[in-house]
Image 1 (cartoon, helix red, strand yellow):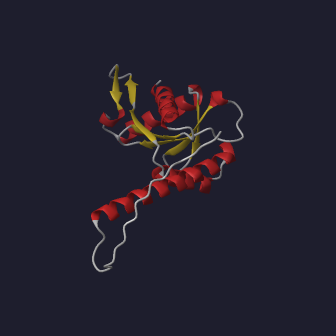
Image 2 (cartoon, rainbow, N blue to C red):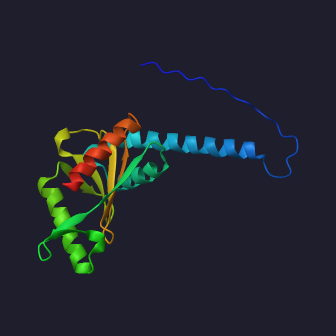
Image 3 (tube, helix red, strand yellow):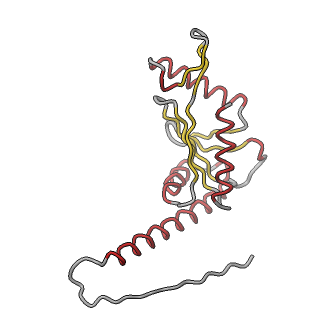
Length: 183
């Protein structure tokens, strides 16, 4: 695959070094800094994918930091609801009153994810997980990064996905993961 880029560059020279930079210089500097930070984070994520599902905890922490810095990350939230037999209805976790009810609902969620979900969750922090799909078979490297974080008190699962092939595939992974969590 051959890739090429054209770069247009405009240089301005400041003769007086006293005082703040012009706004045009500041904006260009901030944008360039953000692009370079994103590029570096994406390269790090690409390098870390090689470790596959057996990635070390410190590399997982680094991947989560990079995910915050890379530009093409798709995010979403899933609001969890559970059937309460005493009330004979489905209730969002965020509206339950007691800590015991919330903990029970989260245990049920965890059990169902392990039992019937196409997702494998690898812990990455107290309420965070790296998501690996069961149907992708044996992997020597991770095909993409997908992290979920669970805000237990609110009953919210946050999804963050970066795919090396771009935002379109990241959106597809978010959709599939959201569907698996919602079941």
